[in-house]
Image: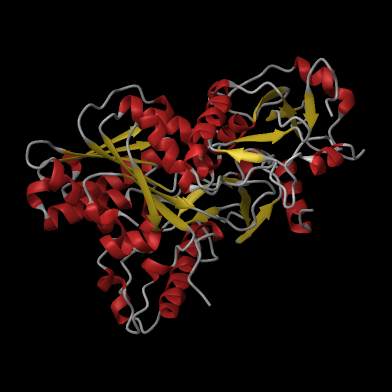
Amino acid sequence: MDSPLVTKLFRQLFTNRASQCLTRRAHPAFATGRHVHIHRRGLASRKEPGETTSESGWKPRTQAFPHERIEEFDRYPMVTASILKNRRERPKRVKMLLRDFISDSLYNPHYGYFSKQVVIFSPGDPFNFNKMKTEEVFHKQLRRRYIEFEEALDLQEPNDLRQLWHTPTELFSPYYGEAIGRYIVHDYYLNHYPHRDLNIYEMGAGNGTMMLNILDYLRRVHPEVYDQTKYTIIEISSSLASLQQEGLGQTIQSRGHTDKVKIVNRSIFDWNQTVWSPCYFVALEVFDNFAHDAIKYDLTTGEAYQSHVVVDQRGELYEYYTKEIDPIAREYLNRRDIIWGNFSQPPPHPLDKPGMDKSGMIQRLRSLLPVSDNLSGPEYIPTMMMEFFHVLDRFFPDSYLISSDFNKLNDAVPGINGPVVQTRYKKQMIPVTTPLVHQGYFDILFPTDFDVAAKMYSNITNKHAIHMTHEDFMNGRADVLETQTKNGENPMVTWYQNASFLLTWGSYSDLRP
């Protein structure tokens, strides 16, 4: 069960008008985005020692599902996140796939989490790691700057629901961005210089720090490459795009990068222009917020059921499962069946049970229990990550992907590849136990299975991909001397032990893990 604090939070969300709960856009001086426990979303780790009716085919999530209302729910229209994006209020009397519910909760322009709630922490001047005695000194300085940053925001407007978070790009600026730039320019010299321009696309750029760090690095160290560089940001959030264009635009101009940068306020899934030129596509910490579908399996037959969400006339949320699998989820399952043939040991599956005999006897016995709905636990599948790979294949055919994200998460919702669902309330991070939460107030983020992601990317794009740990990537590309404390510790290298990089195989012989 969720904690009493969670109950109190939900009570506040439903008794206050949405406009009273939403934070105003941060002033450009503070521009931008995650929380007072100094790990990004509380998740970056340091290195330390039976069918209900024959008509519907629905399977309820829990016994609390209102069976007597199924006929009513059947009459509700099916909607998608695309349909809902023009709505200013959270929908009622509708049903949708779980992935559409998650997409709407996170990205709706009017009430979505990233559209209205997120403020990205910026530490200001770079940390001087070389003058710090130990990594713990860095941790103390970071905490102090974090508190000062939020106190400044509170002077503008106190907000118990402020979603303050951060990224390694911000914490380790400019060195983290320079590591990405060093990786890009190395490959560019080997494959494209001087005959082609250097085209960089970045998706979900936050406050633009990565862009500035890369462009500053190129201008300072590789001016001949900088002269041929074009940088495009693809940003789904209108507020962040405005901050990048207006607030950060002044910084870009003062640094002389104005003619290098273009900001496109659009979802990557709405992209419709083919980029024929070779380009580098940077997507850092975006996989985790790609919407997933949930699948359960019949314990007797193994048949798949897909999760849907119902929103009733009061805004109450219910989950049900149907054997009608939509085309996108079906494609993912089919492609996964193909790529699993390349694994010596396939990833976990809800029908895998310790001690299971080949005949499936234990599953059949379990299916006879009266309290069982005859379905397995849920498996969350990254259908929108697959769709993203389709976008790259169709519209960026000569792209090199540079992506990074979490490979495991704590406090996750039960199920295989279950998400962490959490919100920040009165400066505390609060995890909850279901993704069916009040739209726009909760971060819903998933771990990435990088073995599966690499093979899915290759299956769709016909390009080879590799993955490696955050530590391995940084040790090979970052100026680690600049981020090393006096006793030899290096937080930029060791803090994100639960993160990995996924990279298109280029001409780097030194990139193999």
